Amino acid sequence: MAQKLVKLGLKREKNTLYYIGKDGNVWAAPMARAGKKGGKAKKVADAGVKKAKGYLYFLDKNGDVASAKMARGGKKKKKAAPKKKKVAKKKKKVAKKKKK
Image 1 (tube, one colour):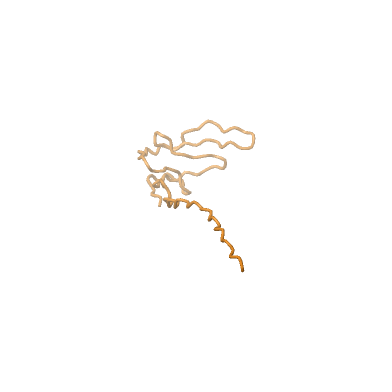
Image 2 (cartoon, helix red, strand yellow; image 1 turned 90 degrees about the vertical axis):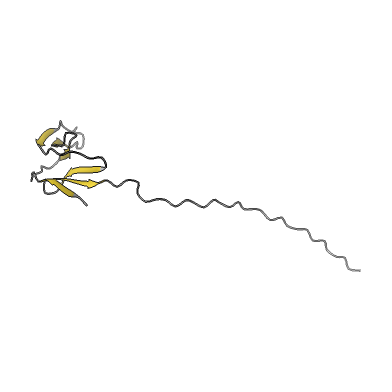
């Protein structure tokens, strides 16, 4: 579950990528689209967020800075049982009895 850190109320523009930079501030960069390259990022707001390891920082739908604990490791896989070798059974030759 995400936790709000800073209420900014930023209005987002279409085709713009918003992210929290290393400095803890909100940055915006135009997204690359069909043949067009993305543009240079601009600082949009001073959030002053101190980042902690293992958390994801993002701009939520209300334009506020939020964080969520990152999922690491996922679901553990069960160990596969070792495969058994198939042993071919040899056919026994049965001697036929002769009638007298």
